[in-house]
Image 1 (cartoon, rainbow, N blue to C red):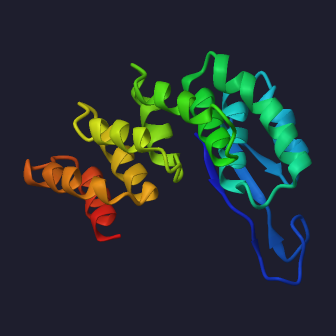
Image 2 (cartoon, rainbow, N blue to C red):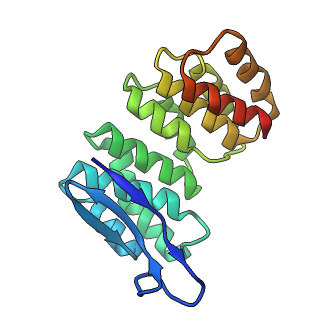
Length: 196
């Protein structure tokens, strides 16, 4: 089982100090702590697929603005092989989402390919984590996923459309609700996306 939480600091303490919870993930029965970009980079080449996937998720959550240009460059070098060729779909999907979040050239094309993957987990992760790109192809691909046979994928697509903030998504989301979406989480995500 994998669970994660983000840093919560009170403003007086630095990550890793007593007054601050650092970014952690519960992986393979143990807690893994990332307080640096270097820790995430190391885990991106780890033999554990869970560590690779969670390191990608950490980079995605860490975001563009919290990394220096040098850190982003090093992260991209570590993420690209995972995004392009990792045998685990979850690790690959998390790396793709992280690359999009780091605004890497060509990452939107990787995301679009992932949104067409036969693996429902890959489609779900990338759809729900893809941040605003300004690329209308992303909105079009997410709209298509509103009709996916898997409820998790439909939920991820609604979340992704909410993140895109494109008004073209409102009518397809409404159509999803009108046709009687059965999946409760997908329905709730569509309603939230419409309300934004």
